[in-house]
Length: 403
Image (cartoon, rainbow, N blue to C red; front, top):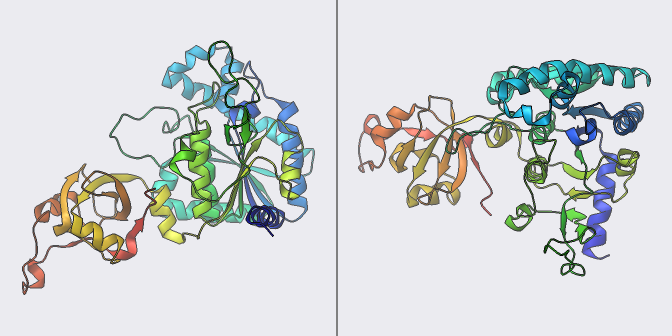
């Protein structure tokens, strides 16, 4: 069997056997052009999710659309959404409309749902993250479908653009939120439904077909069916946000990468196909599938993806080598520079001398103490009390992919 055929078979097998599933619906699927709820597109998805549940699978729905629905109900033009507070108000109005619509659709199929509104702190704080996981597990145990969204009325992480150089947010869109929910629940599959057929690349046969303005004409792109590694070249295929949503293909690739490193499979597919979920979980080759990588376990996933990165430390070549090759802890003496203040138990970004992030970890001490020892080598034979402290112990360091 050829490698491609083997991978396609593995993809089909993983999706047919997936027992715990997270499905994300984007704004372009949930709402119409005027901000109305698109029953025509959403009802088939609800029917498929209900059927999957009745077939013995556990499903979680992550749904965008509250801001768009609120805008439509209030009769606001899309240009008014440039104002952050207006977006928050639209979210407050639209969230109830969204849940009313889902309640009607799921109830008609004898399926119970629960609203789960999350803020960034539900992920960045380890205790709250653990509590969230327990609550979600209980809902699934009650055979309930959790309907998840960010609480945009009080949490603005998804609505606002962060300034360059500011802290790294846990999530800034529902694609990443869906991936973090998948990670916390250790789900088997993540499906991101959007308004395109998958991750697209320029067709070699049609690469020269352009219109009079030099733009590639429709039909000149093809879907990449399988991905086993997220490369810089693949990331370059991602575009910015869509007209109605806040994500775009770039954020979907980031979400898919998280899913892969959680040991699950991710699929990006077109939500306009009314049978898309039925076909995907029957093993059909729809959209783009991202194959599982080695599973990153437990708290290490939280450090890598969910935790709020509060500070940054630049390390010298010796510390970089000891961490990446020798599996060592990070001593404060290996630090060249400390950026941004952080407290004990905060997650910090660890970067090399060129400023490239290669690891993250939980700090044992505050940034002020780390700065006292930065660049100071411990003399051989010195008493332990005089030694530079361990800023991050090895068990709390997660290496990141740097390709």
